[in-house]
Image (cartoon, rainbow, N blue to C red; front, side, top):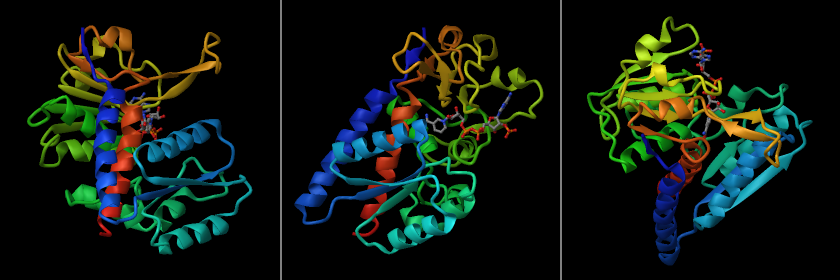
Length: 292
Ligand code: NAP
C-alpha cells in the first residue's frame, strides 16, 4: 500500500506559514499582497478555479479580487486592462484564467503581463529564468509538485524521473525543475509525449512518475516500477450520475492498480490541485516581497 501524498494537508500547512508572514508584513506597516484574477466568459471549470483562488487569498490575508468579463470582450480591451494593472502599484500579482475565448490570442495575453506580476509563471521571461536555473516566478502547478516532494522528504537527487506530457504549464516546467540543481532537483529526467514509442519501457524504469496528460486512468499498475513515487496531475471531469454535480474529477493515474505497486501516490482530488493554489499564493507573496 502506497503512502498517500495528501496535497490538501500540505497546502494547509503552507498556507498557515503564508498567513503568518502576511500578518507580520501588515504589523510592520506594509500592505498585504494583492492578487487580481481576470475571468472572461462563463466556463464552469474556470469559474470554480477562480472562486477557489479568491477564497484562498482571503484565507491567508491577501487582497484578492476577480474582474469578470463577458466572452464578447475584445483582445484589445483585455490588453488595455492588463496594461492598466501592470501600472498599478497596489497590485502584485495578475492571472488571466485560461482558456480564453477563441478570438483572444492566449500567447499575446500571457506575454502582456509584466513578468514581475506574472504569478502563474507563464511569461517567456519567467520560463527563461526557469530554464537557466535563475530565480524567477515558477509556474504554479510544477512548483506545487516540488512543494509536495519537499514536504514528504522525497529524494529526487540521482533518481530517474519520467514526465508524461510536455505542455508549457506542467510537463515542460516540471521536467526542468526536477533536473535543475538544488533541493527537489538533480534528477535524471525523461520527457515522454504522444509520439513516445513504447511508453511503458520508460515508465517501468522510473523512480518518480509525473503524469500530466489529461487522459483519465492512463497510467496503470503494470506500467509502474515497484516502489516508485507517482504524481498525478490530471484533472478530467468524467460523467458520474451518483454525484450531485453529475461529474467527478478523474486523474491520469489508475489509482487502484498503481497504489498497489507505488511507494507514494497523490490522489485526485486532494493531491496536486490544492498545491497549485498554494503555489500561486506563494508566488504572489514573493512578488509583493520583491517590492519591499
Ligand atoms: P496538455 O497541454 O493537453 O498536454 C498534454 C500532454 O500529454 C501533451 O504533451 C501530450 O503530448 C501528452 N499526451 C497526450 N496523449 C498522450 C499519450 N497517449 N501518451 C503520452 N503522452 C500523451 O495538458 P496540460 O495542460 O499539461 O494538463 C494535463 C492534465 O493536467 C489535464 O488533465 C489538466 O486538466 C491537468 N492540470 C491540472 C492542474 C492542477 O492544478 N491539478 C493544473 C494544470 C493542469 P503532445 O505534446 O505530443 O501532444
